[in-house]
Image 1: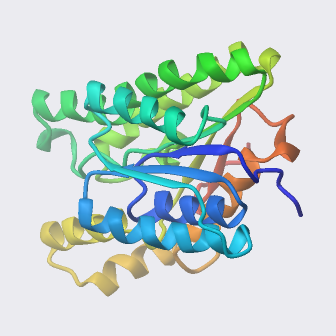
Image 2 (image 1 turned 45 degrees about the horizontal axis):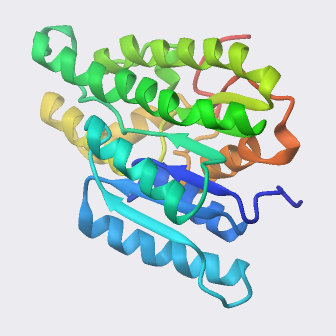
Length: 270
């Protein structure tokens, strides 16, 4: 299936590992120009090289267009500069993955007001900032795709993830509200809500659970997989495939949606 992404410019946040990395790789393989950022410079450099190689295959051996910068998505000036550089080097942003990793695990009693402020800046304010910077240009040009990575905590609170369970639904409300305003301009805004996947974020969650309970990593994982009908954790590449479709030409009539990818873990009928 031709997704119609060749030559388009994609902005991928938190791209050095996990979901962001998987999406950047898939975009490059489809022939998109990819601008990626993350806080960890070493991981980002490795990912950028892998994305270039994927792009070379899509472009018949020629170098794919890849731009990588180290930054924190809560840094307003750094984000503005990165988007400006992307537009100068690669062209106007056609597609954007809003992704910032998850706030720290913990229950309500574990979180002071500083933790709540930091989680708000990371999870919600960063999404607002990115959309404010990118969406107007997409509307002006009459085409665009924004996909936000949230969490299953959008539809069902997750044990020991108080910050995520409160703030992620706000990101989904942003997704829906923006989709209503942007649809007439040929721009779609959707979100994906991953369950438990093999990512570094889940590894941190496992470590936190081990610290709290004294159980083993195997016990933590089996506690989840026993409740997942698919019987396993997901892989980042599986979520990336869904995101690529949402960014494609063919998904132009899908907007304002929150698509859950959790192996059947969430127990709801609609």
